[in-house]
Image (cartoon, rainbow, N blue to C red; front, side, top):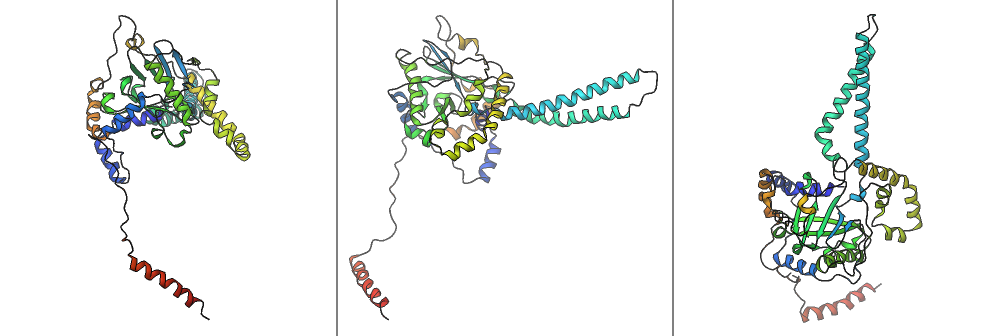
Amino acid sequence: MYFVEWLSWLAYIDPKEDRDAFEKQHKKVKNKVLYESDIQEMLEYAKSPACNTPKSRGPVYLYNEQILEMRCGMWEDKRGLISLISATIIYTIAAFLFIAVKSIALLNKIAQTPHEVPYGSRLFIALFALGIVLLISLPYLKYGLRITRLEMFTSRHLLIRFNRTTQQVYLHHPSYCGGIVTLPWHGVMCSGSDKKYAATGSLGLPLDLMWQPPYAGALHPELVHVGKAANNFAELQAEWEFIRRFMDEGPQGLPRPRITSHFPWPWQAFTPQFEGLTRYFRTSSRITKIGLLLISPAFLIIGTGHWLSLMLCWKPRWPKIIREAGLPGKPVPPLTTLEDYPPAIQERLRENAYLWAARPGKRPERKKRTSTRKPKTEVETSTLEKEIPCETHRADRP
């Protein structure tokens, strides 16, 4: 579930040598150029009303006069496959470790027996089981555990908290995805503010919120995916308008969202697999529906892995300064800056800052494409018209 956030964070701190080598091998990959005028335009769209029907489809974990807390993260609803693979590896290691320990205990018992008892087979089993444990566990601990922690043994959800009193937004990321971040509300940009900022069709994608480097504070942009996957752009607009009105105008007049529990209930694992696909199911053909019915056991397996992931994670907890932010007499959390990261990470972020920096000024207008072919003169046109009947006349000759 943290896969996209993890890859994004690795891209921000990627060493320059590795990035240059990648760009040399993939010369066709071009970064999109962003101008300061583009940022200002997106900020203005984000401040304007998006629609007249604000509505949050959740999941919402906290909602009151001051706080709106929601789930965020791309593909968190698709978690489960990594958990199943990880659980299989962990079970295999545990099973062979149990066999090895049991065999060693039996060998110890044989050694204490005064009579000679054959122990060759038991010694072979113990050594074989220990060899399997080392063969699997060492590579897994070195390379696989970091992949497992994208779904297991980590925070149960990625959270985003909007505080309208402090006019700040807080992102709850694990330390290997950048950690907890504090951002200003006035620097937010959104895919739901206008259709040209949303993906084509907006099918199966959640709402995108972005802070460019001038507002993120750490020389790289912050991109988060909020709420459930959408069936169309109208749902993105309604979700964004709900958030915008809450922060700018308050909760008065907004429909109260359904509050979701942090407890890992089974339906929280199976229902998210169908987020953003309601419209697709309704308009699909009968053959497609039969095919989906045939592969329904796969949904059941992934849902089981999702539930296993939820149970093996813990409820995310905010730092005290964020929990008390906005209360009378309590300090306002400082915005995240480059100095909040370790020195090695700071150096990497400085090296890669040029990748995300916007160009000054306004985006130049596109030049109209003009044809390089010379227009035909009147003499050439009249000559061509005279030649056509002649060619036709010759073709009709016997």
